[in-house]
Length: 302
Image (cartoon, rainbow, N blue to C red; front, side, top):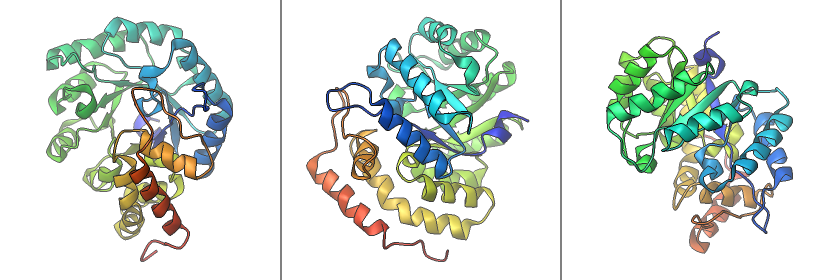
């Protein structure tokens, strides 16, 4: 079975819960993992950028992976995020992390350096050569400062057998459609934009790696699962219910929005590591207001 078949649906980019003193809250992470799995996500992504990985030490990353694998207990696949703007460091982490327990590696395109398309290609070429584990590319220009083009993605997919998918978060629908048109048939393409996941699945994407699925796993999975089954009446109804949530989740920074929601749900403390800060009081109040509507709001036509 291809990676595309195994990961069809909703993956969740897990946040990293912190205690009030700034240390990692492993108990809260365990509770969060159980919550999202019980509510229906198909797989989890540990050490993605939503997990504030730039602020984590290597030792903390290994501890998070240990908690993640223990808590998941093989119920769903685990994807490990390993990315950097230093190619050699990515390879070092691949060699030292417990990737044998994971289904695949998610690796963000190099940030800040603004490499050319050839530089991006050579970066992933070395990563692909450092492991036999499947690699999922991650294109998120708003964070990295450079775009992984559709043509470079297709080139990588065709040249390296273990580059088997991409999380596409450019927000450029034309680029997404070009990628879906030109990619190899077994190459997985998932959305990295929660608010665009529905139309992107309609264009042919295989699902989404989501931030929203931390706090709204059941409803967000309902959007994705219905869309994948071409039931767009149901998908649109659940998506309409979550539209305001998408706005609040990304109103300031990620993961400030999702951590505010999870705090109001009693799952984690509302703590981020600098340079990120918690949601402003104004937007946090909007989160609380939205939460009060959920118990009485049901999707229309479902």
